[in-house]
Amino acid sequence: SMPHKEKIFVRGNHERGRVRDLLGRFYCQGTRVCCGLQVMGVPYSTYGSKESLLTPGMDLLLSHEPPYGTLDVATAAQAGTCPRIGNASLNEALNYLSSSQQLQGGDGRQAQPRVHIFGHVHEARGYEEKNGTMFVNAANANPGRARRVDHQVVVLDILKNSSRDVRIVSGM
Image (tube, rainbow, N blue to C red):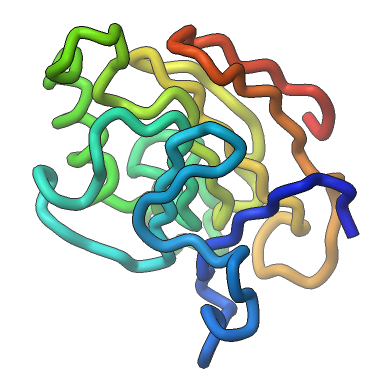
């Protein structure tokens, strides 16, 4: 068990049944405030229009799948002929937010999330920054079909202010 005050989970492709009931207050789908940060949880295979899938101005976006084209290259055996297996709808929504500039209200907050954490593609574990967002693939299972945990938990520091500063504390 992690000693952190708050923990947040979204449903992944291996979770079946009543995950929300089992995780209780730790389950996140939609928006909420957690430790002073604006957070949005997007479970596995949630689709929507680019205008409606994501809420602008989030500090943290947590999804199971990566957006298409970002830390989503799978092994050939897993992906068949298409090595990129990220979610195209999620990518379109992020691009839409990126092109939206700043939010109304003038507080300096950007429309796109400060941090987007996901997993799903185990062999694409890592991080990269694009368009003002830090993308973190925190998958901790072995490459390919999950059989064991190969990596430790990723811990990030996200400041509770309008800065875009994010620090990876451990796990990468």
